[in-house]
Every structure is written in C-alpha cells, then in structure tokens.
Length: 151
Image 1 (tube, rainbow, N blue to C red):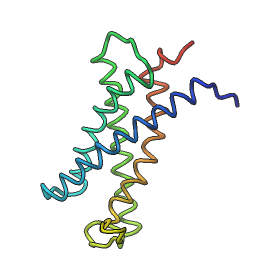
Image 2: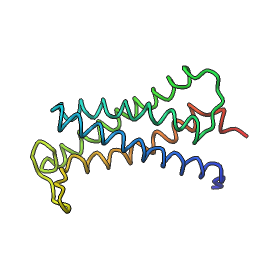
Image 3: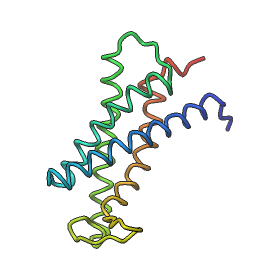
C-alpha cells in the first residue's frame, strides 16, 4: 500500500484541526453540562455541532486548501459527514456508558488528577472523539473535498 506524502500531510493537519475542534467541543460540553446543567447527550450534540462548524472552516482553508466556490454546498457535505459523526459519537458514548455504567457521569465517579476531579464521562468522550475522527477524515477526504484531493 502506497500512502502519499500529501495524504499523510492532510491527515496530520486534519488531526491538528480536530484537536483544536476538540478544545471547542470540550469547552462547550463542560459549559453546557456544568454551567447550564443540560443532559449529557444533549450537551454533546450541541458542542459537537459547534466544533464541526469550526472544523469545517479550518479544514477548508488549511487542511484541504479548497477553492470550491460552492461553499454552501461544500459546508452541507461536511455537515452531513459531521452529523453521521455525531451519530457515531453519541452511539459510542451510549454504548460505553452502558458497558461501563460505573464510568458514567451520572454515577459521579471519576478520579483526581492534581487539583482536578475528572469525571469518567469526559474520558469516554475522548474515546468517542478518536473513533469519530477516523470516520470524519476518510469521509471528508473521499466525499466532501474529493476534487481537492485529485492530482
């Protein structure tokens, strides 16, 4: 299997953008759960949507260098991929909470790290981000930004 430098570069950039999106996602997730007292899965859907919009902008410009003039159409494609990713993320969180009920946020369980108490739900969220990132990269590479990836 021959993987091009361009493919690897795009994957690395996608991961960096994704990390910045994870900061946006986690920031709003914590805000929605801890400050606004929203249910976890609702907060996850909202924070994921905000992060997806952030990620689209950065991936369009930096990762894929898209020159597509149909920005709205491209955004809709990206958002559809992200919505499927939201389903994957939410399903992953649901399954992990079901498989490991002691790890759910509702149980109040977590662990102390320095001066922070980290709830297990946030660790489960990190796992779901990793799984969802793989889907998002390949779907966007092959579908949303397909023309950009042809040489």
